[in-house]
Image 1 (cartoon, rainbow, N blue to C red):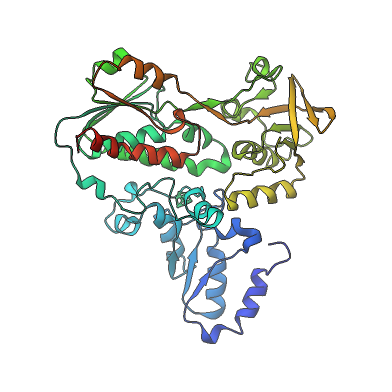
Image 2 (tube, protein in one colour):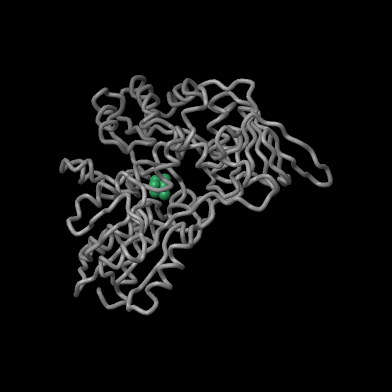
Length: 436
Ligand code: SF4
């Protein structure tokens, strides 16, 4: 933290304590710099090991290194290099309590890695004073005991959509013995999580769809058909008992003058988050002097801010509410505030978007209307559920004894954790329908 203890300061005051210490657990951060304590997701794996190394070299006592360690190779390297004697893991074990056993048995590929989202654990515990949950592990409480249950009669499940919610539903159904078909219209599954992970600071997100795809590949009764639309005709071929729609979401584009006409248009300068990701390679390494305006102060808007501050652009963020990042977990919110302060991001709160033009936004704050010019403008006003497949398929199968359920963002656009839990909850549908 700015003005806080440096490593050199800490090494000095530890001189007074060392006689009383058997093992040093070397960490860092205060509440005001919580993103270093409960690491923000862009920190490198094992980035704090140099601190453990410094303490070990000075005091010659066993040291624990911790912080974003979830890759066994990183853990092994820290130990092999002698930087620390022990590895401390917190979130990595919430995400996968079997981490150590899997490594010991040479099953590293099966590890469900923490993605450092801080939503289920820190967000619940510190943010809301609720029990810990996990975005990637819907079984924090009961473990994988559901896998011991098996359907008592044949059950065909068809899942439409291969994002994280759809993949979780499909894997869970197959793991309890359903013959499961997952239809994904794109060439690869992964959905929005895979897309967002193309932002450099969000690259860890890719670990979750990759884990789900690996888990799916182990299941002989789960068939994934890519490049396949989940139409009624296609689904009927699989004689479903249960249809799960997990069709995701798309950017919300409210009826604001000029917005729909200009967003994500070829050669244009106004993008949604998906437009940004599609063109991510087109933005040069340095954008010094370029003006970026981001409308929407939620998680996605702040991802865009983060992306362009790293490129040294002049960034403004516009938010209608009084606060930016209102619904974020405390770690991400603190980190976002630090980044905005560090890079002098102009924060226009209580400000409404009136009109989108090709190189400016018309904005209103109180009674003042003004124009904000940009080189590139971004509309990050949230996502909208793609609810059509659920409605269409519910109607199509209404006369059949087929249960159609909707999970994840296509039910309501939310965070990944909600879709993971709803995917796992297919267990309850199987119970209700008498298959379990
Ligand atoms: S909620 Fe997110 S940060 Fe916390 S343990 Fe799970 S994956 Fe990791």
